[in-house]
Image (cartoon, rainbow, N blue to C red):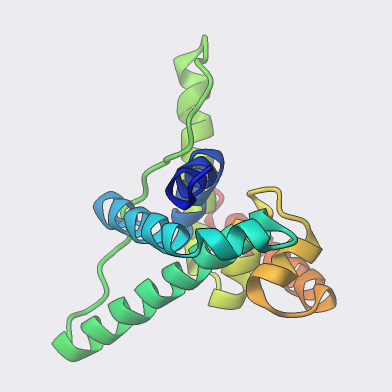
Length: 174
């Protein structure tokens, strides 16, 4: 298998999870798509190292995380330079849904997911990072590998993030 074929196989395997993860970093669907393309390029450039990595899944998510963090840093810098106020995040659910027989239930589920995404985006970056990775079924060890922190620190951040999310969701409840 060539490096390019391996990169494409990695993207095929992890792209859905990466795109869902990007919802925690970027609200704008077009910017999320651009970000996903940047991540694919980074994965393609690192395909040889990923093949040699002990945990390729964690390595791919570390690449996605680093590209997303760089993207956010650029956005903050650009906004600071332009002195523009922050725009309200437009929420869009990118996860695929099973076909529901009841449209009202689907609407309720979509609204809950939108509230959750909004609450996740309000979290401080360290907590948002662990939650979006946790939602992609990465365990504490894999998250620690992605963020390059200890597994203990990951568990602490997860607990604090969950508490903050619970508080935000309770505040926004009607």
